Length: 353
Image 1 (cartoon, rainbow, N blue to C red):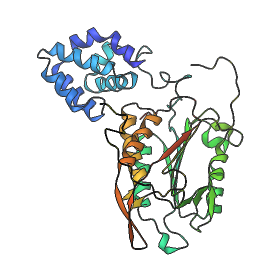
Image 2 (cartoon, rainbow, N blue to C red; image 1 turned 120 degrees about the vertical axis):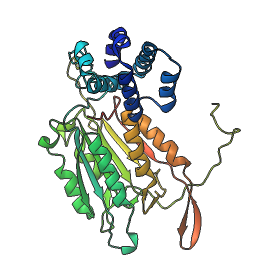
Image 3 (cartoon, rainbow, N blue to C red; image 1 turned 180 degrees about the vertical axis):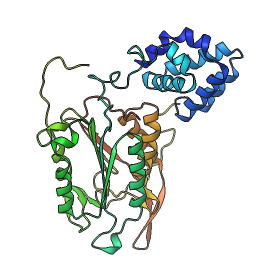
Image 4 (cartoon, one colour; image 1 turned 30 degrees about the vertical axis):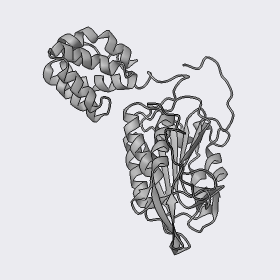
């Protein structure tokens, strides 16, 4: 693990890291969100000697775990190649994104590309009044973040329900996923309790979205994460605002040893933009859920956070948003809670290539 590597070369780094390289590393680690601004200032200001700065830097990053340590080692290679070679950080004793994280505790996420990210956005509908302008921006944001995360992004738009079903079936072929570690599908549309709507306002059920990729229908995705982000209403109800106060708040401040079988619906993550029966909010600059999701995916993946931690942060941010919506000339408070559900069996971390 990369944090163990940093520990093993700690003394050499303290002796050999120059002040200019230390400052370059601090700048990079702040940009990568490994260290925050306060931590960077503390390392620079509270340690007058160069060696003390180096020691504090190494210890601060090492304590954040293998992902943070791996990022630092990569930056050492960029800024001081001679030191990187001297410490032999490129040898198997050094960090390996290919092998460090594979096993029973975490899904492998190192193939190139990581997998396909399929985006289906329905903007124009049979009823012109149902047009969803904000989904164009949502699709761009999703494409950008999943390209950053190492996925091939395929976008399709304005599909009737039957064409959506056919498209999804076309993506469960063996050769598509054989050498890839993950599959992601994002669907942006109007929706109902049991699924999403095609551009013809007909239903494409969640069963038709998910089942093409289960263990029986798509063997090449067995034991691999299958991730679905669904931005759509799930009914016509609107969530009420509940005030949180000090009185009612809780806050006070692996390798495979032998073959085994899996249920066919294992290793799924389905993140719905809202809970059952309720509406999902979107305006011209995008939906509440997708905007928050893209932000936290990018930031959290750089920090090495797993997807459930990221989605918890999305839930926290979206549930605190406040807005107003007008329906038939009446204004209502707009509140919303996303709902992830999963059958994942390991941590899922989207590692940036």
